[in-house]
Image 1 (spheres, rainbow, N blue to C red):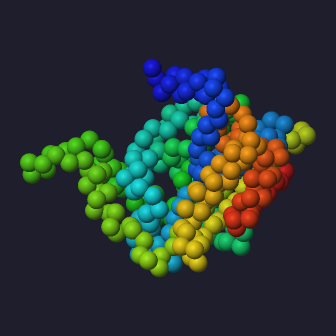
Image 2 (image 1 turned 90 degrees about the vertical axis):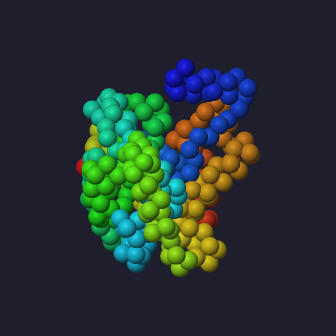
Image 3 (image 1 turned 60 degrees about the vertical axis):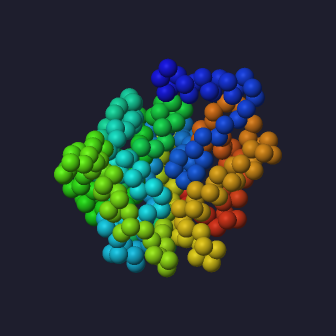
Length: 289
């Protein structure tokens, strides 16, 4: 049984037993799916949906850590995501590309922020390949400070991100595992250091015969007063809100439900009201092309 077949088996079991499984309701997947899903619904014909998101150190701490990065979740998993093949939609077809490709520099200049950032393709939003097959283009890119991707590319080129064990002085070790063990202590935040979570998602398409673009922006800092990281805030609060809505029966679809199909319509409006109550603000900007 393939992974897809196994997933379909679980979905049908959940439908048969009246069970709802919300899959990927955090930051990414999660907020990325929900906002892009909303943008797609607002188009008569959606053509492209690109998510750009990531957790980075607050700017004042970028020079204190290698790769201008700070650990907000398992670093070895971050390195793995830099090495895998990624399914994306290109020219209306699902194709496989290398992680860290389709590099893009951009300026984030909304919500009172004006910063240069960069992003590249990584795994994310796999549900869109199946829930929104009408798209001509769809991918998720991870946001980092400028310079990060160039440094990671050098490590990749040197073989330091490979997972296959190599023999060194009579001992076999994985270069990636060794690199992670060396770098992890250098990437852990000090007590006073905080993180930022950034999101910029774009939907393009046609509305009323006019080409349109909808962008979703988020720049969230850590809650220093309550000791909650930015990553903790934008991951846990979206999950908690969805869990409460599920418990109240407001989300009632059965089976394995992707975020873009669970949070829509009136539920979408209420969901974002709850995010605002927790001081998570997402700006939507629409414009003609």
